[in-house]
Amino acid sequence: MDLQEMLDQAATGSVHVEEGWGQGRATYGGLVTGLMLSALRARLPGERDLPLRAVTISFVAPVAAGAAEAEATVLRSGSSATQGQVHLRQDGQVVAAMLASFGAPRESSIAVAPTTQLPAFAGPDEALALPHLPGRTPDFFAHLDLRLADGGLPYSGSETSHMRGWMRFRQAPPRFEEEHLVSLVDAWPPAPIQMLDRPRPGSSLTWTLEIVGDVRAEPDAWWAYEVRTDHAADGYAHTHAHVWRPDGTLVAISRQTVAVFG
Image 1 (cartoon, rainbow, N blue to C red):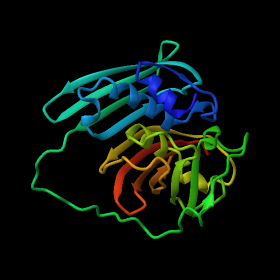
Image 2 (image 1 turned 60 degrees about the horizontal axis):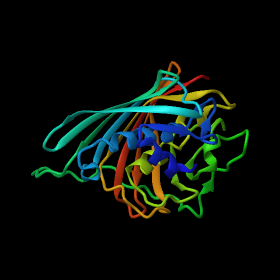
Image 3 (image 1 turned 120 degrees about the vertical axis):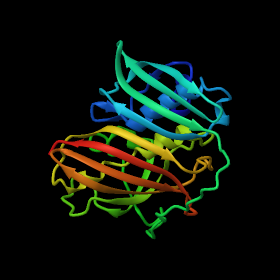
Image 4 (image 1 turned 90 degrees about the horizontal axis):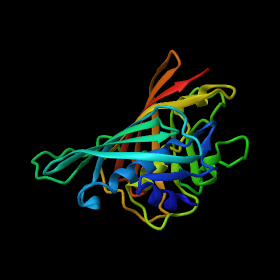
């Protein structure tokens, strides 16, 4: 079962999380978020009429391959904004929780252009492709094509704590929508682990993705990505990232709290 089949299945409230999407002992967080968003989307009035504005997820416990139940609830549906939540359960236990906000466009006199512009860095063909090496890199790298243009590789003892590069699916989905974007953006390794000189465990505690532009695109389009570490101490790091279309249009802002054991 491929990504699209899992997303479609999650819309029914029950999904089988496939093998091959792991990162250590857990399923890749981007896939988990995409499945939960798909479950909530199926319960919204008008479904695709309301653009996603923000999603916040807590990774409560490792999501294992196998059966999962997505309990999606619409908390409130107003004239413009709709709020919803999803609990993903395995064996009766909550393993992930998500809050999502959707909002129809409304008239406003306020317009502020993005203050962060797409920086100049090597294109996908010139950037370093992060390989899928079974047993050495996360399993889900087999499904995602990441190209590192600036910053250090994980566990390379780097003095930097930022990354810039490009991303897309290795196998393009039949269409590209919000569920695909959230399934893609979380693919990058936590930025500060490049400062470690040997492999050590690390995982996301929380992730918030704010959508500021139209995410619909050609299924095989490259998306530009930049992440910076705002602060790291006591085994926790806080990062923020931006996602752009290849033409430089800002699409999303990502924020994470990461636990780093080392």
